[in-house]
Image 1 (cartoon, helix red, strand yellow):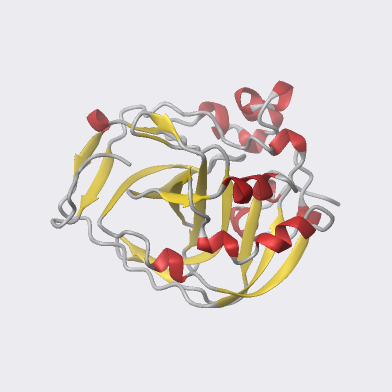
Image 2 (cartoon, rainbow, N blue to C red):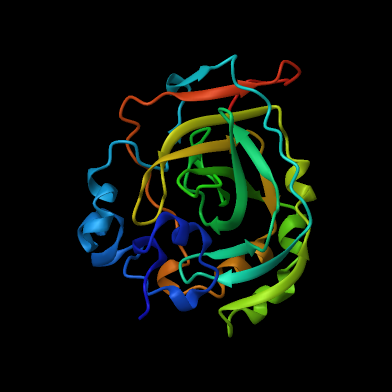
Length: 266
């Protein structure tokens, strides 16, 4: 029986490593598009009824400085990984220990990452060209934290460069082992500014309580890399960004390192 990971469990949603387990019944347009996700399954009800949904727009009036926030300590390690065509996005799934981040005294371990295009979150009044999500789970797999990175077109992204050639092969396969995957580029990403709020998964079942951390510095990827990330996907998922959701009174916290030259958005 083929099941969408989202209706198995949160752990399955975050950890499924093969498109063999997916029977995706949602889309980004048409009758199964975002406006109707909540009607597609009882387990998707939060997509329509939730009050703390993602993505959102980062607007200055909703952002406040939280001096109690700390720099994100992250030290991701080399790890064996698998490139996966999840049908609705391209992901990299890890074997074994990759590294943790600590939020409010809880450790969250990195389990997988994936891309959306265009970006799902809106910053500085614009939607960007792509967005990377690094999905983390607590040890009891009950809590999710996502670190998001926004991209604009420009120089190639060294992170994606590690598996560019295999993206071509992914058009005919559902997953490909890519061996040792180096996350040093993420370790070096700016730690001087980030934005945090509590939201949801951006695909069904749209579960709430997800802690979002959006890094404050744009990365770049090339047009070729962006096209390669889209090429293996089903045509209805080549645009795989959920529309913006209402903030509903939520505040977005901001961490700002004293040596940062600007407090502006990306």
